[in-house]
Amino acid sequence: MILLRNGWIVDGSGAEPVRGSVLTEGERIARIGEIGPVVDCEVIDCDGLAIAPGFIDLHSHLDLQVLEKRDEKIRQGVTTEVVGNCGFSPFPFLGTPDSLREFAAGILGRPDGWGWPTAAEYLKTAGLESNLHVYPLVGHGSLRLAVAGQRQSPLSAPELDRISGLLEDSLSAGCAGFSTGLMYAPGSCAGRDELEHLCRIVARSGKLYATHMRSYTTGLVDAVREQLDLARASGCRLQISHLQAAGRANWSLQEQALKEIETARREGVDVEFDIYPYQCGSTVLTQWLPAWALEGGRQALLQRLGDRELRRKIAADTEAARAQLWGDITISGLSTPGNAGLVGRNIEDVAAERGVEPVEAALEVLIEEQTAVNVISFNQSEENLRQLIQHPLCSIISDGFHVAGKAHPRLYGTFPELLGTVAREKAWLTLAAAVHKITAKPAHRLGLRERGLIREGYFADLTVFHPTRVQSHSTYADPDRAPAGIVRVVKDGQSILCGQN
Image (cartoon, rainbow, N blue to C red; front, side, top):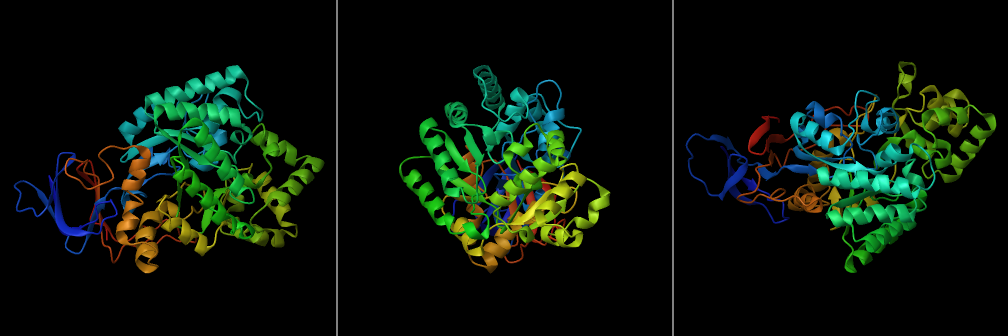
């Protein structure tokens, strides 16, 4: 038993904090309120501290790292992790996992040594080897690879039947839902009929459909409309991943995108969205290339880049579609030590040093690194970020993943950043509202029972923190730094972090 004594209970509902104690017994919360001495109980003095439900990260890419008992998320107060986002999951595969590893390594953060033929086998491993609650989504890109490889064309009827069977098997095995990554090949070529068919399967399961949409730049509003139409037609529960208007010229589009979502919600569509509390995002550099150039995978792309005419067309199409300035795109991860000095430098700077146009510098680095290049991009205005974070339909996520270089600070600091910088210093949210967006709200989206709130009889996932001191110390220059102010983390009644300042 653990007695968290005389703290400020921020129960996850959005209600204002109240003074009291929380007693756990076994894996459950036994009592809440004024609690006297308890025999054979660990007592933690929480005077001046906040007691909250364990934080839930509704969107990350730590599918592999959660199996390594790493502590980046626990140090932030996280007890539950949702992986398999943006169409990338480390399962399923048919035959060998080689193509799946090539497809997902840039996002999952490791090029080899992994892959599970089925969701059931991944879930079994996660249950045995993770120190967090792990809820995977099954990725559309991974499903497509298993059946049709990197081919970018409509699926045949037999192929769609096979993907449908794999999706049904994954959901039945315990996946929390289905994700798409419609800016990444091969998912980018999926048409309306394919997506609606798969979303109907998700709807029948009552689980979540999370989407990295086709566009967050000039096509943002159309991309939102596409997903809302899918939700209307299929009846699925829709989660729009990391909603934002990316690129300075597109910031004004956010208002219309939100109006579309709000209208659909009023009409009965079960739609919400999420965002990380940073103006910069992170992904792979190949996302800026035209989809046609990515068909067939890495070697096919490298062959095209080696052809003078095709390379010229790739460069032209990249420039025509680019939303961010090249100076807003910074290299964060590379595969070879020879280019290690490029980490932390933007594409414009690299181009000036090499005496070439920025798009040519980007293509050169992709060739040198065998296409394995991660980047951090400046995406959105502070005003837009504030509007998203304050919106009642928004949950807060990390979207974190590992790179061979310097990861985005969201991997190490999202939740203390929300509680410290966003809620306390900028006053964009009350403490209670901030906690709600990382506890009860994501728990509800996932359909988790008896988690996400401090209630008697609920599972004892709890995070204790200093409300006046909690803060991220992770920066873009030095991301791997522990946050301050997370004091104790309890998962199912067992302490998994003790004594951090």
